[in-house]
Length: 398
View 1 (tube, helix red, strand yellow):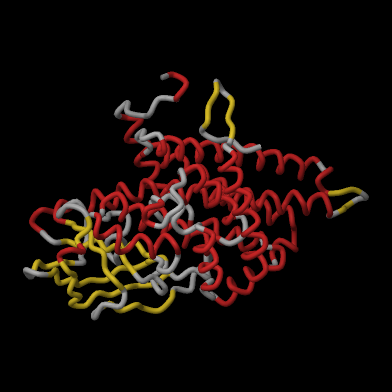
View 2: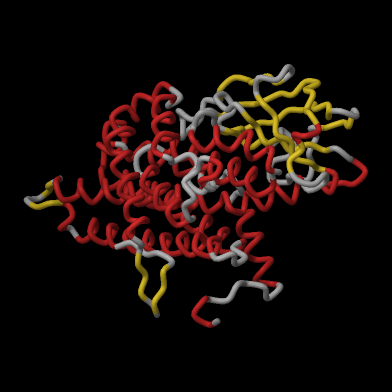
Protein backbone atom coordinates (compact mmCIF):
# COMPACT_ATOMS: atom_id res chain seq x y z
CA UNK A 1 0.00 0.00 0.00
CA UNK A 2 1.24 3.47 -0.86
CA UNK A 3 0.67 6.60 1.17
CA UNK A 4 0.41 10.18 -0.02
CA UNK A 5 -0.21 13.69 1.20
CA UNK A 6 -3.93 13.89 0.59
CA UNK A 7 -5.08 13.61 4.18
CA UNK A 8 -8.59 13.01 5.46
CA UNK A 9 -8.22 12.42 9.16
CA UNK A 10 -5.49 9.81 9.15
CA UNK A 11 -6.33 8.33 5.74
CA UNK A 12 -3.80 8.74 2.95
CA UNK A 13 -4.59 8.35 -0.74
CA UNK A 14 -2.97 8.98 -4.08
CA UNK A 15 -4.77 10.94 -6.77
CA UNK A 16 -5.55 9.29 -10.10
CA UNK A 17 -2.82 11.39 -11.71
CA UNK A 18 -0.25 10.31 -9.15
CA UNK A 19 -1.17 6.65 -9.61
CA UNK A 20 -0.82 7.06 -13.38
CA UNK A 21 2.65 8.57 -12.94
CA UNK A 22 3.71 5.72 -10.66
CA UNK A 23 2.45 3.08 -13.09
CA UNK A 24 4.08 4.79 -16.08
CA UNK A 25 7.42 4.91 -14.26
CA UNK A 26 7.10 1.28 -13.19
CA UNK A 27 6.35 0.12 -16.72
CA UNK A 28 9.17 2.22 -18.16
CA UNK A 29 11.67 0.81 -15.67
CA UNK A 30 10.72 -2.78 -16.44
CA UNK A 31 10.43 -2.43 -20.20
CA UNK A 32 13.17 0.07 -21.05
CA UNK A 33 15.71 0.03 -18.22
CA UNK A 34 15.80 -3.54 -16.93
CA UNK A 35 16.90 -5.34 -20.14
CA UNK A 36 20.34 -3.69 -20.35
CA UNK A 37 20.99 -2.60 -16.79
CA UNK A 38 23.54 -5.32 -15.91
CA UNK A 39 25.59 -4.67 -19.04
CA UNK A 40 25.55 -0.88 -18.57
CA UNK A 41 26.69 -1.28 -14.97
CA UNK A 42 29.52 -3.65 -15.85
CA UNK A 43 30.77 -1.50 -18.74
CA UNK A 44 30.16 1.88 -17.06
CA UNK A 45 28.15 2.70 -20.18
CA UNK A 46 26.22 5.95 -20.04
CA UNK A 47 22.51 5.25 -20.72
CA UNK A 48 22.22 7.72 -23.59
CA UNK A 49 19.26 6.10 -25.32
CA UNK A 50 17.46 5.44 -22.06
CA UNK A 51 17.91 9.08 -20.98
CA UNK A 52 16.51 10.22 -24.33
CA UNK A 53 13.42 8.08 -23.73
CA UNK A 54 13.13 9.41 -20.18
CA UNK A 55 13.02 12.89 -21.66
CA UNK A 56 10.30 11.85 -24.10
CA UNK A 57 8.30 10.41 -21.20
CA UNK A 58 8.59 13.68 -19.28
CA UNK A 59 10.71 12.28 -16.43
CA UNK A 60 13.48 14.88 -16.75
CA UNK A 61 11.33 17.97 -16.15
CA UNK A 62 8.48 16.67 -14.05
CA UNK A 63 8.09 19.70 -11.79
CA UNK A 64 8.93 22.37 -14.37
CA UNK A 65 6.03 24.63 -15.33
CA UNK A 66 4.32 23.64 -18.62
CA UNK A 67 5.07 27.10 -20.03
CA UNK A 68 8.74 26.07 -20.06
CA UNK A 69 8.14 22.59 -21.46
CA UNK A 70 7.78 20.69 -18.20
CA UNK A 71 5.13 18.49 -16.68
CA UNK A 72 3.98 20.88 -13.95
CA UNK A 73 3.66 17.98 -11.50
CA UNK A 74 3.84 18.01 -7.73
CA UNK A 75 6.72 16.66 -5.67
CA UNK A 76 4.71 13.58 -4.66
CA UNK A 77 4.44 12.54 -8.31
CA UNK A 78 8.16 13.07 -8.66
CA UNK A 79 9.11 10.87 -5.69
CA UNK A 80 6.70 8.16 -6.86
CA UNK A 81 8.48 8.07 -10.22
CA UNK A 82 11.91 8.21 -8.57
CA UNK A 83 11.10 5.20 -6.40
CA UNK A 84 9.99 3.08 -9.35
CA UNK A 85 12.97 4.00 -11.55
CA UNK A 86 15.34 3.37 -8.62
CA UNK A 87 14.06 -0.16 -8.11
CA UNK A 88 15.79 -1.01 -11.39
CA UNK A 89 18.47 1.49 -12.48
CA UNK A 90 19.96 4.03 -10.09
CA UNK A 91 22.30 5.45 -12.67
CA UNK A 92 19.21 6.62 -14.55
CA UNK A 93 17.45 7.79 -11.41
CA UNK A 94 20.37 9.95 -10.26
CA UNK A 95 20.48 11.58 -13.71
CA UNK A 96 16.76 12.20 -13.31
CA UNK A 97 17.20 13.53 -9.77
CA UNK A 98 19.96 16.02 -10.58
CA UNK A 99 18.17 17.33 -13.66
CA UNK A 100 14.84 17.74 -11.84
CA UNK A 101 15.70 18.66 -8.25
CA UNK A 102 18.86 20.70 -8.72
CA UNK A 103 19.22 22.08 -12.23
CA UNK A 104 15.65 22.66 -13.45
CA UNK A 105 14.39 23.66 -10.02
CA UNK A 106 17.32 26.01 -9.49
CA UNK A 107 16.84 27.82 -12.79
CA UNK A 108 13.05 28.04 -12.46
CA UNK A 109 13.15 29.36 -8.90
CA UNK A 110 16.14 31.69 -9.17
CA UNK A 111 16.45 32.51 -12.86
CA UNK A 112 15.10 35.52 -14.68
CA UNK A 113 12.62 35.13 -17.53
CA UNK A 114 15.29 35.17 -20.24
CA UNK A 115 17.24 32.42 -18.49
CA UNK A 116 14.14 30.30 -18.02
CA UNK A 117 13.12 30.63 -21.66
CA UNK A 118 16.62 29.89 -22.91
CA UNK A 119 17.45 26.83 -20.79
CA UNK A 120 14.38 25.18 -19.26
CA UNK A 121 12.66 23.94 -22.46
CA UNK A 122 15.79 22.02 -23.46
CA UNK A 123 16.45 20.69 -19.95
CA UNK A 124 12.84 19.73 -19.21
CA UNK A 125 12.48 17.72 -22.41
CA UNK A 126 15.85 15.98 -22.19
CA UNK A 127 17.33 17.67 -25.26
CA UNK A 128 19.97 18.83 -22.78
CA UNK A 129 20.78 17.52 -19.33
CA UNK A 130 22.39 19.60 -16.61
CA UNK A 131 24.89 19.27 -13.81
CA UNK A 132 25.21 20.94 -10.42
CA UNK A 133 28.79 22.01 -9.77
CA UNK A 134 29.36 22.70 -6.08
CA UNK A 135 31.85 20.12 -4.75
CA UNK A 136 35.57 20.79 -5.07
CA UNK A 137 38.71 18.90 -4.04
CA UNK A 138 38.91 21.04 -0.88
CA UNK A 139 35.23 21.96 -0.49
CA UNK A 140 32.95 18.98 -0.11
CA UNK A 141 30.85 18.94 3.04
CA UNK A 142 32.12 22.44 3.91
CA UNK A 143 30.87 24.16 0.78
CA UNK A 144 31.72 27.61 2.15
CA UNK A 145 35.35 27.03 1.19
CA UNK A 146 34.93 27.53 -2.55
CA UNK A 147 38.26 27.92 -4.38
CA UNK A 148 36.72 28.37 -7.84
CA UNK A 149 36.82 32.09 -8.59
CA UNK A 150 34.78 34.43 -10.78
CA UNK A 151 36.49 37.77 -11.43
CA UNK A 152 34.29 40.63 -12.62
CA UNK A 153 35.81 41.88 -15.90
CA UNK A 154 33.11 44.33 -16.86
CA UNK A 155 31.05 42.60 -19.55
CA UNK A 156 31.76 39.13 -18.24
CA UNK A 157 33.09 37.10 -15.32
CA UNK A 158 36.35 35.18 -15.73
CA UNK A 159 35.83 31.73 -14.22
CA UNK A 160 38.70 29.57 -12.98
CA UNK A 161 38.68 26.46 -10.81
CA UNK A 162 38.01 22.75 -10.50
CA UNK A 163 34.84 20.90 -9.54
CA UNK A 164 34.75 17.19 -8.75
CA UNK A 165 32.25 14.39 -8.20
CA UNK A 166 29.98 16.04 -10.77
CA UNK A 167 27.01 13.86 -11.73
CA UNK A 168 26.22 14.16 -15.46
CA UNK A 169 29.64 15.79 -15.84
CA UNK A 170 30.49 14.01 -19.07
CA UNK A 171 27.13 14.39 -20.76
CA UNK A 172 25.64 17.67 -19.53
CA UNK A 173 25.30 20.66 -21.83
CA UNK A 174 24.82 23.18 -19.04
CA UNK A 175 26.33 23.53 -15.55
CA UNK A 176 25.19 25.47 -12.51
CA UNK A 177 28.56 26.54 -11.08
CA UNK A 178 29.14 28.00 -7.64
CA UNK A 179 32.19 30.29 -7.53
CA UNK A 180 33.72 32.89 -5.21
CA UNK A 181 33.29 36.35 -6.70
CA UNK A 182 34.13 38.41 -3.60
CA UNK A 183 36.59 36.64 -1.26
CA UNK A 184 36.49 39.41 1.35
CA UNK A 185 32.79 38.65 1.92
CA UNK A 186 33.38 34.98 2.74
CA UNK A 187 30.53 32.70 1.80
CA UNK A 188 28.41 35.79 1.10
CA UNK A 189 30.65 36.38 -1.90
CA UNK A 190 29.75 33.10 -3.59
CA UNK A 191 27.69 33.39 -6.78
CA UNK A 192 25.98 30.89 -9.07
CA UNK A 193 26.58 30.94 -12.82
CA UNK A 194 24.96 29.15 -15.75
CA UNK A 195 27.85 27.78 -17.82
CA UNK A 196 27.59 25.91 -21.10
CA UNK A 197 29.91 22.97 -21.72
CA UNK A 198 30.67 24.14 -25.26
CA UNK A 199 32.27 27.38 -24.10
CA UNK A 200 36.07 27.77 -24.50
CA UNK A 201 37.98 26.82 -21.37
CA UNK A 202 35.53 24.19 -20.08
CA UNK A 203 37.34 20.85 -19.80
CA UNK A 204 35.86 17.55 -18.65
CA UNK A 205 38.11 15.03 -16.93
CA UNK A 206 37.99 11.23 -17.03
CA UNK A 207 34.94 9.33 -15.85
CA UNK A 208 35.22 8.04 -12.29
CA UNK A 209 35.28 4.24 -11.82
CA UNK A 210 32.75 3.93 -9.01
CA UNK A 211 31.47 1.25 -6.64
CA UNK A 212 27.84 1.87 -7.60
CA UNK A 213 25.71 3.95 -10.00
CA UNK A 214 28.45 2.96 -12.42
CA UNK A 215 26.86 3.92 -15.71
CA UNK A 216 26.10 7.47 -14.59
CA UNK A 217 28.64 10.11 -15.59
CA UNK A 218 30.71 11.30 -12.63
CA UNK A 219 33.59 13.58 -13.66
CA UNK A 220 35.95 16.31 -12.59
CA UNK A 221 35.31 19.54 -14.53
CA UNK A 222 37.93 22.25 -14.96
CA UNK A 223 37.27 25.88 -15.83
CA UNK A 224 40.26 27.72 -17.30
CA UNK A 225 39.63 31.41 -18.06
CA UNK A 226 36.03 30.74 -19.03
CA UNK A 227 34.26 33.96 -20.00
CA UNK A 228 30.78 33.90 -18.46
CA UNK A 229 28.44 36.62 -19.75
CA UNK A 230 26.98 38.87 -17.07
CA UNK A 231 23.48 37.72 -18.05
CA UNK A 232 24.42 34.19 -16.93
CA UNK A 233 24.65 35.13 -13.28
CA UNK A 234 21.86 33.10 -11.64
CA UNK A 235 20.04 34.96 -8.90
CA UNK A 236 21.41 37.92 -6.91
CA UNK A 237 25.16 38.37 -6.61
CA UNK A 238 26.43 36.84 -3.36
CA UNK A 239 23.50 34.44 -2.95
CA UNK A 240 25.31 31.43 -4.37
CA UNK A 241 25.88 29.62 -1.10
CA UNK A 242 22.31 30.19 0.08
CA UNK A 243 21.07 29.05 -3.32
CA UNK A 244 23.14 25.86 -3.15
CA UNK A 245 21.93 24.97 0.35
CA UNK A 246 18.28 25.65 -0.50
CA UNK A 247 18.52 23.65 -3.72
CA UNK A 248 20.25 20.72 -2.02
CA UNK A 249 17.51 20.62 0.62
CA UNK A 250 14.99 19.90 -2.12
CA UNK A 251 17.42 17.53 -3.77
CA UNK A 252 17.55 15.46 -0.59
CA UNK A 253 13.92 14.51 -1.12
CA UNK A 254 14.85 13.09 -4.52
CA UNK A 255 17.79 11.13 -3.10
CA UNK A 256 15.59 9.88 -0.25
CA UNK A 257 13.16 8.63 -2.89
CA UNK A 258 16.06 6.97 -4.71
CA UNK A 259 17.10 5.23 -1.49
CA UNK A 260 13.49 4.18 -0.94
CA UNK A 261 13.47 2.64 -4.41
CA UNK A 262 16.68 0.73 -3.72
CA UNK A 263 15.20 -0.62 -0.49
CA UNK A 264 11.81 -1.53 -1.96
CA UNK A 265 13.41 -3.01 -5.08
CA UNK A 266 15.68 -5.16 -2.92
CA UNK A 267 12.72 -6.25 -0.83
CA UNK A 268 10.61 -7.19 -3.85
CA UNK A 269 13.43 -9.29 -5.30
CA UNK A 270 14.11 -10.97 -1.95
CA UNK A 271 10.43 -11.70 -1.36
CA UNK A 272 9.98 -13.27 -4.79
CA UNK A 273 13.14 -15.36 -4.43
CA UNK A 274 12.19 -16.54 -0.94
CA UNK A 275 8.90 -17.90 -2.24
CA UNK A 276 10.64 -19.87 -5.01
CA UNK A 277 13.78 -21.15 -3.27
CA UNK A 278 13.21 -24.33 -1.27
CA UNK A 279 15.27 -25.84 1.53
CA UNK A 280 14.37 -28.72 3.83
CA UNK A 281 11.22 -29.37 1.84
CA UNK A 282 9.66 -25.89 1.89
CA UNK A 283 10.12 -22.37 0.54
CA UNK A 284 12.67 -20.44 2.55
CA UNK A 285 10.04 -17.77 3.20
CA UNK A 286 8.36 -20.35 5.43
CA UNK A 287 11.40 -20.48 7.70
CA UNK A 288 11.08 -18.04 10.58
CA UNK A 289 14.62 -16.69 10.09
CA UNK A 290 13.72 -15.48 6.59
CA UNK A 291 10.14 -14.51 7.39
CA UNK A 292 11.34 -12.20 10.17
CA UNK A 293 13.85 -10.57 7.85
CA UNK A 294 11.05 -9.89 5.38
CA UNK A 295 8.84 -8.48 8.14
CA UNK A 296 11.57 -6.08 9.26
CA UNK A 297 12.22 -5.03 5.68
CA UNK A 298 8.55 -4.36 4.96
CA UNK A 299 8.10 -2.35 8.16
CA UNK A 300 11.16 -0.13 7.79
CA UNK A 301 10.53 0.48 4.09
CA UNK A 302 6.99 1.62 4.85
CA UNK A 303 8.33 3.95 7.56
CA UNK A 304 10.84 5.36 5.07
CA UNK A 305 8.07 5.84 2.51
CA UNK A 306 6.03 7.85 4.99
CA UNK A 307 9.00 10.12 5.75
CA UNK A 308 9.74 10.65 2.06
CA UNK A 309 6.13 11.36 1.14
CA UNK A 310 5.68 13.70 4.07
CA UNK A 311 8.75 15.74 3.09
CA UNK A 312 7.43 15.91 -0.47
CA UNK A 313 4.00 16.98 0.76
CA UNK A 314 5.49 19.73 2.94
CA UNK A 315 7.45 21.05 -0.05
CA UNK A 316 4.27 21.11 -2.14
CA UNK A 317 2.40 22.94 0.62
CA UNK A 318 5.05 25.64 0.96
CA UNK A 319 5.93 24.50 4.49
CA UNK A 320 9.58 24.60 5.61
CA UNK A 321 10.70 21.08 4.78
CA UNK A 322 14.39 21.35 5.75
CA UNK A 323 14.23 18.98 8.72
CA UNK A 324 11.73 16.66 7.06
CA UNK A 325 14.02 16.28 4.04
CA UNK A 326 17.03 15.53 6.25
CA UNK A 327 15.08 12.95 8.25
CA UNK A 328 13.78 11.31 5.09
CA UNK A 329 17.22 11.10 3.48
CA UNK A 330 18.94 9.93 6.66
CA UNK A 331 16.45 7.17 7.40
CA UNK A 332 15.75 6.05 3.84
CA UNK A 333 19.45 5.79 2.97
CA UNK A 334 20.13 3.70 6.08
CA UNK A 335 17.17 1.48 5.23
CA UNK A 336 18.45 1.10 1.66
CA UNK A 337 21.89 0.05 2.85
CA UNK A 338 20.62 -2.28 5.55
CA UNK A 339 18.00 -4.07 3.52
CA UNK A 340 19.90 -4.35 0.27
CA UNK A 341 22.47 -6.26 2.34
CA UNK A 342 19.67 -8.40 3.77
CA UNK A 343 18.36 -9.05 0.25
CA UNK A 344 21.78 -10.39 -0.73
CA UNK A 345 21.78 -12.55 2.40
CA UNK A 346 18.35 -13.98 1.59
CA UNK A 347 19.56 -14.86 -1.90
CA UNK A 348 22.63 -16.57 -0.46
CA UNK A 349 25.31 -17.33 -3.06
CA UNK A 350 23.00 -16.27 -5.87
CA UNK A 351 22.82 -12.80 -4.36
CA UNK A 352 26.55 -12.40 -4.88
CA UNK A 353 26.36 -12.64 -8.66
CA UNK A 354 25.20 -9.93 -11.05
CA UNK A 355 22.41 -11.95 -12.66
CA UNK A 356 20.15 -11.60 -9.61
CA UNK A 357 20.41 -7.77 -9.39
CA UNK A 358 20.54 -7.45 -5.59
CA UNK A 359 24.33 -7.10 -5.46
CA UNK A 360 24.04 -4.05 -7.75
CA UNK A 361 21.38 -2.51 -5.55
CA UNK A 362 23.62 -3.09 -2.52
CA UNK A 363 26.48 -1.27 -4.26
CA UNK A 364 24.16 1.54 -5.37
CA UNK A 365 22.78 1.98 -1.85
CA UNK A 366 26.00 3.28 -0.32
CA UNK A 367 26.10 6.52 -2.28
CA UNK A 368 22.71 7.58 -0.91
CA UNK A 369 24.40 7.95 2.50
CA UNK A 370 27.03 10.23 0.96
CA UNK A 371 25.89 12.55 -1.82
CA UNK A 372 23.76 15.68 -1.47
CA UNK A 373 24.77 15.80 2.18
CA UNK A 374 26.25 12.85 4.07
CA UNK A 375 24.30 11.08 6.81
CA UNK A 376 26.48 12.93 9.31
CA UNK A 377 25.40 16.27 7.80
CA UNK A 378 21.75 15.21 8.07
CA UNK A 379 22.27 14.39 11.75
CA UNK A 380 23.86 17.82 12.22
CA UNK A 381 20.83 19.51 10.65
CA UNK A 382 18.37 17.48 12.72
CA UNK A 383 20.26 17.73 16.02
CA UNK A 384 20.67 21.49 15.66
CA UNK A 385 16.90 21.84 15.33
CA UNK A 386 16.34 19.50 18.28
CA UNK A 387 18.70 21.42 20.56
CA UNK A 388 17.19 24.76 19.55
CA UNK A 389 13.63 23.48 20.05
CA UNK A 390 12.97 24.20 16.39
CA UNK A 391 12.03 20.71 15.30
CA UNK A 392 8.90 20.89 13.17
CA UNK A 393 5.73 19.84 14.93
CA UNK A 394 3.80 16.80 13.73
CA UNK A 395 1.02 17.93 11.43
CA UNK A 396 -1.70 16.42 13.60
CA UNK A 397 -0.75 18.75 16.47
CA UNK A 398 -1.35 21.86 14.37
